[in-house]
Image (cartoon, rainbow, N blue to C red; front, side):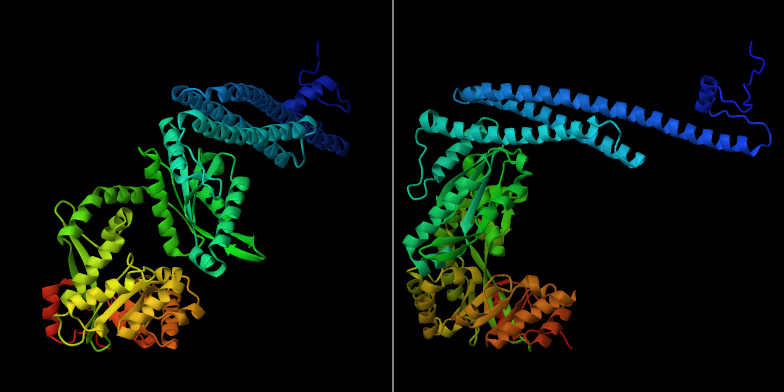
Length: 607
């Protein structure tokens, strides 16, 4: 029997009993005695180290367990993916139904792969947390090497998955080429799929339950390239770009030639590339190249649009149309940019398709109408009026220019719309008092059109209006894209008295050197720049720069979208010649405009 039930320490340490008390935190010493106090402090230090060591051991055990679980999960997933790959390659050559079932299994396998990789990240986080708390790596050498093994396995599986996707796309294309879609063809110049074949491939993927993406790229200013080096050399540029696409596109993407200087890319799965936005940016980089052609380097960029179903019912043609529209939006903002079709854009495109046939009837029977908005001097005198098209739709209400132009663009009727607006505007303007000019914005009838001069001359002659009262508005993009062919047509009409206005100035990409060469007399500063005037210093500075360029080159300067007295006063101080906006007058029908013009100058804000 123990005579000292509390096991007091009297200078001798009893191993097992003391260890038990150390773990429980109970240590007793006789009062006094520096030596015993030192022993007390040392024993407490050992106790703390032992407790921390036991905690670390528990953590290490947990980490090892997690990593062992990861290893088992990854090994099982690798085995399953290998089995899936070998089995499904043969199924891809069979029927469409079996193809759909195969895709479902691939999706499940990919889900398990992602789960395994998440376990790797969990284990890695536990190791880092343990290292942080202990101030060093755990003593067991197996942990760092084991974690690295799992990361290597995970990365290897990602590579395997991409390879399998590429093989799947190639197998599918071969199957379509040989049996299911015998009409699959390739472009003779570039060797890429044709547009028709790419659409067939999209339709097949959509029918099988896939969510493919399509990208449409339009080479920037390629007409200038053809004009500078010739069409045959231009073809060599296209062939070189096609080779770049075939060699450097991701494994699950396939390229096609969309039209003359446009390309398409079909991708079976954007998820492995970080989504459609990331894929679009990465593909656009492939089009930024200096292509060696006949001893010179040709710098190339492309505007790119992208679209995917996003869970909406769609056909291959739908996706191509959505991507083409997104590309057009990117091109309007400048060269080398990317735009992904939004859900709203897709809805608008579908609406435009519905209105296609109705627009044809409107143009045929004259069911559109024009409103007119004055452009005034600083003193309120009206010297020009812009014609703005309207469509009084029986079900959709009054459709404005942006909506109408969208429909006309999709249906290929922009040129017909421009011709109608030009004729109607000139016939109305001939009734205005004095020498007030009419401005017409052209986007489909462009100066490089072989019939451009004849169409304008016929409209002027038919209306009986003076040539100096006709102003034709063009965007920077339209003028610069066809300057070499457009220049002579524009100068011919300028000699007759017609004036040209550059619309949307400040948002395009023209250089000052080329701007000086344009046969343009009027610059219209874009409303997006005007909107910033008076609100922030940077916005006012950009507007000042645009106005300064116009004045330095002796262009007449018009500010568009002036809505507040503050904007008017700032712009007048910058030297703007004329103003257009709701501050002075809203667009009105022809009869109201004639009454407004008869009353003389419009009121302007006082200083």
